[in-house]
Image 1 (cartoon, rainbow, N blue to C red):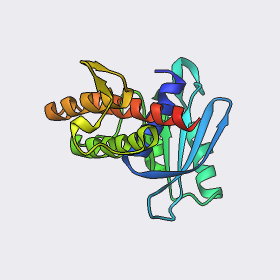
Image 2 (cartoon, one colour):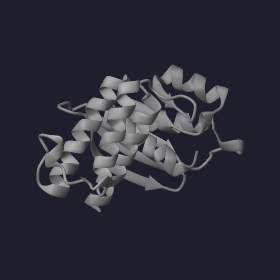
Image 3 (cartoon, rainbow, N blue to C red):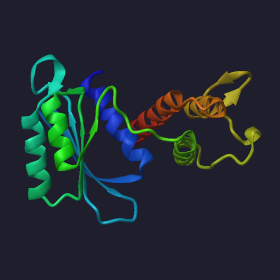
Length: 188
């Protein structure tokens, strides 16, 4: 899993948990997202370690201690640390400091219903941005013409419906990641 994959994981979690982005700060080896839950003044730091702080891609205890100091100094209400892998000492320190850990193997579990709800909200925003309206019925959408998809949003939307019917959470995660990438490209 690359550093950019970990950044996309942070964006995915932010979207699913309905965090509003306040600020993104990139430095050598890490990316900080300062976010807030929608309708709240709470301040959350999501730190993504994009470069290994020790050998073999492991995030060490010093990185956790540094983040803990930042959380206290800047009055964050919560911290989430995302890295490829963590040493046992780092895991213990995160548990002690109440910092949520996310890695290539450990991801919060989201119910398919929650994912699908977020996906549909994202689709509606993208339909408005790209076409000016949200289709009410299938024939209103011009993203599927003559048996071919001419719109990435429509393709992901149809795929997400299929994945939701089967309860395939991993595929729903990927569908949402694709929609967030489309949204980011439109905003750039």
